[in-house]
Image (spheres, helix red, strand yellow):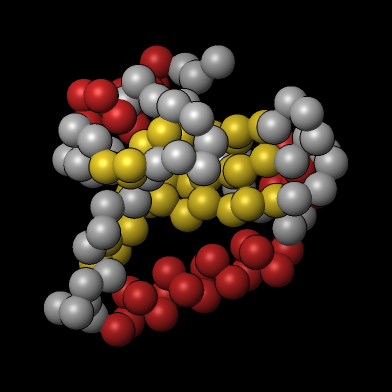
Length: 120
């Protein structure tokens, strides 16, 4: 179950028209109001990144951040059937990813994602 703080953060940062799905692998673009009720939701808008999301496909994945000595994630979504998980880190400031983006922030974000992925 998600905390009230996490729900408020997702609501504040969610794209205006994100991809979402009520059934896995069936995502379509919907208005934010409808999308926020869906269990599968696109967190990062098309032109910037507000979240680093790691997909960990092994049992016990919910503790992978701890095993790798990474910071506590903002959220952890666990697949109850196999123990795989997505762990997410909310960024304090979004990073622009459009054609107008500066290279230094993109490289910094890529380096962090690479390091986190390599550790888990």
